[in-house]
Length: 131
Image 1 (cartoon, rainbow, N blue to C red):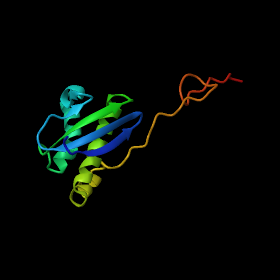
Image 2 (image 1 turned 90 degrees about the horizontal axis):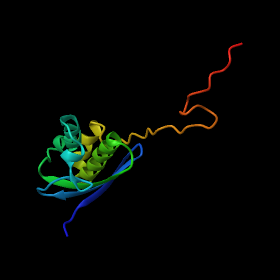
Image 3 (image 1 turned 90 degrees about the vertical axis):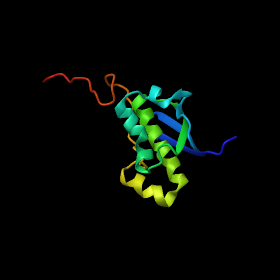
């Protein structure tokens, strides 16, 4: 059994748990390669950002379990989890770098619940009669 660092990231309805391992290996999300789960160069830049900033790309690999939410919320949860795990590796060295870019800040915004007696959405009201 390999030793790993565990961390959790959340965003909207998505939760990502990470196991960060030292060495070379393939990063997986829900048992799929990360580039297959989050395709495209923009997504790739975003999930590699914590590793690029700390200059640890290629020194670590990770396995993620992601549940809930949509793809964007899941991606942001993955980045937060990865940043938290890297912070645990070397707090003095990596925390200021990740903090400066806002990668350790939790974005607590969630979808507003719909209220009863209104139209289908959270703030939409029924039109009042004129005069």
